[in-house]
Image (cartoon, rainbow, N blue to C red; front, top):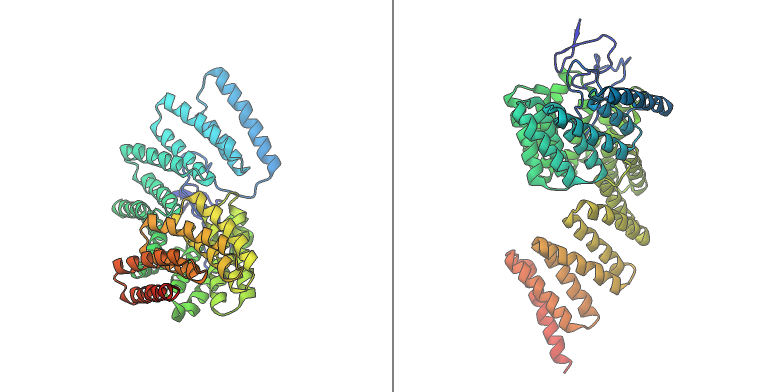
Length: 479
C-alpha cells in the first residue's frame, strides 16, 4: 500500500503522479525517473475533485490528436443517449470541455463548460457549479478576458466559502492572485496570495501553504521585500528537498536566480549559479515531462541568464538567451502574454545597445501592443518614452520623437509619476530649446522644475532653474 507524500491519500503503485493533488510521485532525488513527472505550472484546475472520480483535469500533455477525436465522438454518443433518457450530462460536458482544451480549442471548451454550468445550476449542485466557474475563469484568463475571469473566480470563492471547502478556497485564491499579478494590480494580488497563505496555515494544508508562499514571492518582488523573499525561499527549498520534489526545487531555484539578479552586481555570480542549477534539473526530467511544462520552467531561466549576459557585455549570448526564452513562452502560450512582453522589451533594449535602432523600435512597438492589451499604463509610458528617445537621439526624427514623448508624458502625469514626468518635461524642453522654440522650451522647463520642487529634489530643481535663467538671457540678447 502506497500513500502520497503530499496529501497522504492512498495511491496506486503504477501512478506517475497523485490523482488527488496532482503532485509528481518522484522517489529519488538522484533522478532515477521511471515515471512521468507532470504538474500544471500555473492555475489550479479542480474539475472532478470528488476524490472517488478518475482525474480529468485540464493539464496540457502530448496527446495523440486522433485519440482525442475518438474520445470526443464517444462522449458525443454518450451525451445523446443520456439526453434521450433524461439523465444528467454535466459531468460529460466537463469531460468534453477538457478534451477540447487539450486540442487548444478554447472556444469550444468554454461553450461546453457554460452548458455544464447551466446543467449543474438546474440540479442545484453547488460544488459542481463552483468547479465550472473556476474552469471558466481559467479559460477566460488564458483568453485575455481578465474581468470575466475575476468574476468567475469570485463566484467560485463565494460558493466554496459557503461549503467551507477551504482546500479549494486556497487554490482559487491563488488563481485570483495570479490574474491580478498579470494585470499588475499588486495590491489585490498580494491580498489574494496572503489570504491563501493564511487559510492554508490555519487549516494545516502544508503543500498549499508552500505553493501560496511561492506565488506570494512574485508580488514581493514588485514590492522589493527581499528579506521576506529570502525567508520564504529558504523554507520552500528545505521543504522540496525533504519531499524530493524536483519540480518545486526548480521553481525555487529560478526564484533564487531572480532574487540575486535584482539584488545587484555583487550577487550576479550567485544568480548565475542558481539559474544553471535549475536548468540542470530541468534537463534531467526533460524526457519524462511534457514540453509545455518544460517550457514553463525554462522561460525565466533564459530571461535572467540573458540579462546577466548583458551585464557581462556578451550581447550575442544575451540575444540567443532572450530568443530561447521567447520560444519557450510561445510553446506554452498561444495568445499574447505579459511574459512575452517582458522578453520582447528586453530584446528591444538589447538592440538599442547594439545600435540596431529600427529593430529596437519594431520590438518596442510589438511590446507596446501587448502592454496595451494588459492595461499596464506605467509600462506603456516607459515604452513610448524609449521609442521617443530613439527617434530623437539616433534617427533624428524630431516629429515622431515629440509625439511619443508627449504621449508618455500624458500617461505619467495622469498616474502622478512626478519623477518620470519631470524627466520627460526636461527632455522636451531641451528639444524645443535646440530648435529655438523658446516659448515651448520655457513651458516644459517650468513644468519639470515644478515636479522636482514637489519631489523636494533640490539638485535637479537647481539645474532646471539654471536652464530657465539661460533661456531668459538668450531671449533678452535676441532683442
